[in-house]
Image (cartoon, rainbow, N blue to C red; front, side):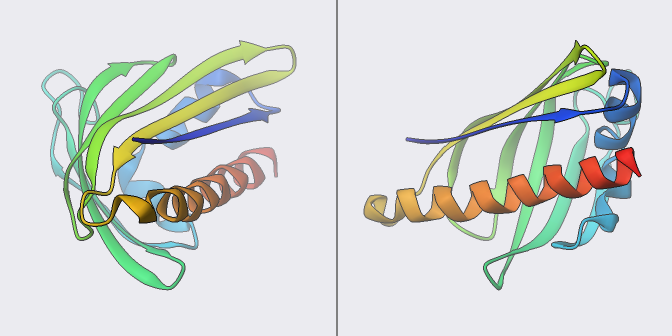
Length: 147
């Protein structure tokens, strides 16, 4: 099992960070994402628990599609998702983003745990590539929010 574990501080209020990250259909400003859409609305809130989102993006030149289900939606504190389908054979355990007010802004802690069953020896390389892509997402979100 590999774990992507990233943290970043944003110099904007937690509500503003949450609003952008919880807008799944708005992810297309991220350069690696070619499309992002909501396949199914959540039970109590459009992007909440039960929502299913589909993301098409590039990781090291490879096109990947994730279909993810939102399993925890606690504005503006926590968002958890589970990859239900993927064009690469990963077994996803959890993705979790925690948001914490801190001084002049907001801290995000993002973890994602997975296995790459076809070739477990490739898990570290896959984890590194995904970590770099997810960090790029956070950097772009930060730049957009702090502009």
